[in-house]
Length: 463
Ligand code: ACO
Image 1 (cartoon, rainbow, N blue to C red):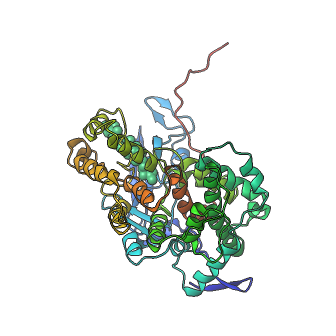
Image 2 (image 1 turned 120 degrees about the vertical axis):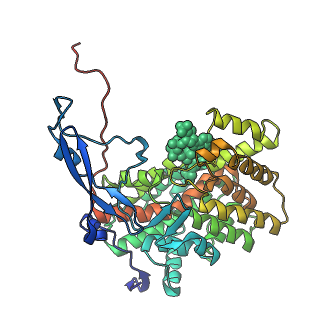
Image 3 (image 1 turned 60 degrees about the horizontal axis):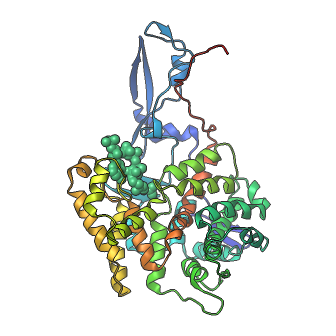
């Protein structure tokens, strides 16, 4: 990665995103077309191929090219659109950041398998830099970026008024979303960065990554009525977070290496996941040219839902209900099959195989508890639930496997993270992906995201 100088630091140069004119460059030699017949019109639509062989039908000209065609004896006004609620079959962008093959259970950041990154114990910040700037950092780049993170780890003291105004026991995830917005008001220059300017962008990325960790820990401290702990510049990213979470003014918390490693792994595995719901939210907001802070804070809100990042909380609540004999595993499986519930931590839009992140986390929880010499009755329940689900015909037919959230809550419990912080932990990590995806979108200069609809309300009537 070519280095660049900034404020006497050598920093990585963020990778340029693809632009619309690059799209077809992926497969120039073999342009193929799909044929679509509507009424009497036969249309040829270009195919777009990704570097891993993914194929998409380019329908950008579908509507203008079908304007006025006759279908069932009537002209179609404006042209034909596609209908795909939930975007199950719709590609909204071209991206170079994360590749997922849900059928084979593969996930790669910028081409590197997450299993390999985990095995080689890459730290979260290395992986965040990979995702944001396009390459793993060398030693100098890593050190310089870490220095920036340290320089930016404080939040403006004025933010204390914001925190002071919150009711007791407020949800840290809601606090996080509002606080990220609020913190940008104290850094107005960040609300106006030029995404094409490497220096502006690198500083904004470092500020966000650093401050989200401080704000997350402060949110927790305020939610439990404890004094906030300021960051310690001597500590690395994860140790510093655990210090801000668990130290109190009269007792410093020194996180064990095992806890720090596990937290690094957790953050590394959640850092990006291509066009999931929260990332798509960030891109949708960003497509209006909303600034980075406004865009990512909407991502936090999107992530909070129980069908997305909030699922790790639901899994623990459910395992606790089994543990307290309020329900049984068999009952839960029956309820899932009878559509009374969706079994949290199972199923995925993309993975129709074991989620590779869940595989790594499952092994780590077991090791972590052994090394901590701890037992968690919920882990045994999770193993049994997984075993029964994976041999059940309903789950087999629908290809429902454990997703990342099934074991991630158990891992966070082992590190000592409280339940109401689980989704916040996910947001700290996903911040890396949101930053990278926002910039990629800005540099591609896309059209504003604005889906269409099929109207089925009343036809014109008089009052
Ligand atoms: N439990 C029971 N049945 C399920 C589950 C589940 N967890 N997930 C999907 N199904 C069933 C659906 O009812 C549907 O059945 P049908 O064909 O009879 O209608 C079928 O499987 C396909 O499901 P879809 O709704 O089409 O799947 P979709 O891709 O829209 O949803 C989702 C994916 C939201 C993750 C879903 O599997 C779910 O709700 N899981 C539980 C919540 C969860 O764990 N979310 C975290 C996902 S990972 C993440 O966001 C970080």
